[in-house]
Image (tube, rainbow, N blue to C red):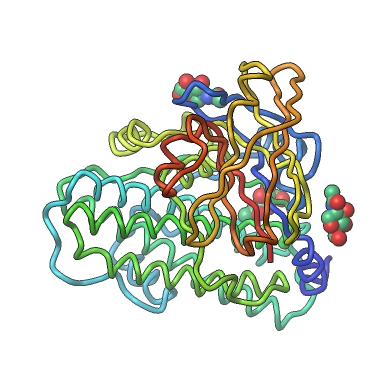
Amino acid sequence: MVNAITSAVLLGAAVVSANPVAYGPINKWGGGGSNLASSTSNGWGWGSSTASASSAGQTPFKFPLANGFPDLSPEALRQVEELAQGTLPDGPPVSHLQDGSVTVFELIAFNELFEVAFFSSLLANVTSGAYGFGIDSSILKDQVVAALTAVLAQEELHNLGANGILKNAGQDQIQPCEYVFPTASFDDAIALARTFTDVVLGTLQAGQFGLASDGDVGFVPLLGAVQGQEGEQNGFYRNLLGLIPSAAPFLTRSEPQFAFSALNQNFVVNGTCHGPANDKLFATLPVFGVLNVESKNISLEDQTLTFSVSTPSSESDVAAWKVTYINQQNVPVTESISNVHKSGDVATFDAYFPAKTNLNNALTIAAVTYGADSFASTADVAKATLFGPGLIEIN
Ligand SMILES: *[C@@H]1O[C@H](CO)[C@@H](O)[C@H](O)[C@H]1NC(C)=O
Ligand SMILES: *[C@@H]1O[C@H](CO)[C@@H](O)[C@H](O)[C@H]1NC(C)=O
Ligand SMILES: *[C@@H]1O[C@H](CO)[C@@H](O)[C@H](O)[C@H]1NC(C)=O
């Protein structure tokens, strides 16, 4: 059994992220998109070929939960609300959504189903003291179980809320897929929760922008309520990792394409998402090629990072692409690609990362982009992305 605090603190010092490999994406941009087994661990232990093999060999997580979720009886819903310490919003239903707003709630429902699956698996592992998930201190274990019990119920309500909004507006609801988790220890799972929550915190910003710009501004405060709630969760995960609770003054912006790509590249078992709403979401949002961050233990220094992707493109084609970094609320930073090497379909290359100069703490989203030397906005980056997101966490 590991001592969770000690090892979490050690891990906190070493937190790095890279985009792991699991099920290859359907790349709608023609830039790549097959599985790439990285031979190195990425610092979380969730990107190694072992982790990826475990994804391949792992029995996928399948719904429903024991309480029937996502189809809850009224009694089961009440029980979830009690565990969640609150209720679904009870205001009058809104009967129409703009098309863009439909996508916002579809993506939220899609993401929340993954989160329910993840926290359900994590809570079961911690409660049962599964290998790698034992917590020696009974006080800490009780705190973690209490927190995760509430989080699981709260994520169930986030999903039911988003799907309920879709239903009220006459839309199809997002159905669960099957999921795999690349984590095999408590520390890795918490580090992963911290990073995917950071992606969610960034994506909800884009959701608010989308709702406000297409005329469904009335839902913006609801997303703000969810965002704050996810931020509270993340303070706890960061604390467990030995990090201060609040990462940066302005958290990193993301875009729906990056969140959807990360979910499908890492957790969703390809081909297991069914139903008209899921089909519509896959037709609306691309799943980019996987961008592996090969550099490990990335610290707050100006440095050159190494990346890899799987692509049929030639070395000179790859050299013409760029790496673009999104961090906090700043204008994206675009850097040239150098030192390209191809081995089979795997292209390995370098790009400068001025982390210290730009104080790139918290989440940085890296993307391989084409066609421009600079981008005015994160949305412009997403439109020109071939591979990504590469997820880099500093402090
Ligand atoms: C990353 O840092 C941890 C903790 O300091 C260390 O154990 C590990 O070997 C480092 N990994 C790499 C690839 O440098
Ligand atoms: C995922 O499944 C789709 C069909 O459902 C297929 O077209 C695609 O090639 C698959 N991708 C991978 C990486 O297996
Ligand atoms: C729970 O434990 C199983 C078995 O070790 C593992 O495959 C799974 O990834 C764990 N769940 C999480 C969320 O880490």
